[in-house]
Image 1 (tube, rainbow, N blue to C red):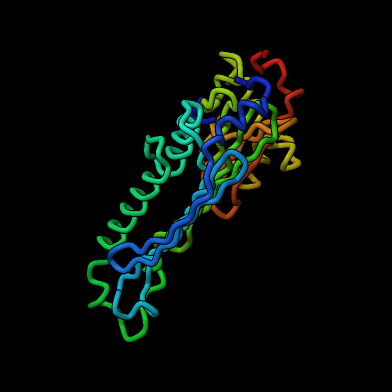
Image 2: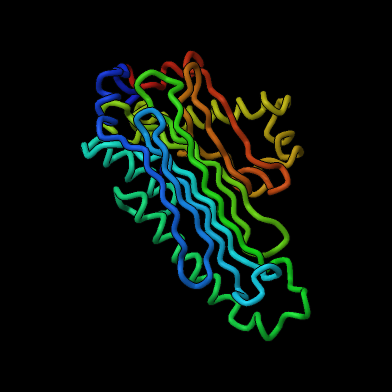
Length: 281
């Protein structure tokens, strides 16, 4: 099985609220160097703080209105408090969002923004000399959006859903979704081997394939391929999944099992359907 996301213990309100004992409402505005326009805010939501930042880096700081620019928008939940549980949650969110292993989402976001800005400027060093009067190539406008939301759809599990998009030139951008499933008591991210019994990969993959055929209303793999799926690779068990109240959703982003034009694919397996594969809790 690949990366991703113990069907957990009962979710208790007392422990959940304990994490937000030190929660605060706060906001700040900051103007970054190198011509950036930046606004950052944080507001308390449940026992999480929502961190928002919006940044713009124009290439031409003299003619800002007509200049192509890099825009970055980030909205992520941050677990309140200084407990080990909150540190684990924030580390999981930071790593999923920025590929940065840290418990400080604020600093991770700053590092991400700085890295994107440096890469953007490095890619277009001759823009000022190349551009025509009041015109520029549309693909000089880069953008990144990271939008995370917290939900509690299954007892004992905190789910963070990240709907992200990016455009870095070319014919089109990319949109993709990342799911994190977190034990609400311990704060540990739940992996597939916390959910499924050892050695069930082949049977589980068969269930997912059958569910895909049902979704497409076809009876065979050849018909699946005729629909545009699994033409470049075989079905696999993605570690990008979401634990809902009555089912587990396996989420495949563009290009994973189908071409870009087919979009993302969500395949649901009811817990009753795969009960023999689940670790008994």
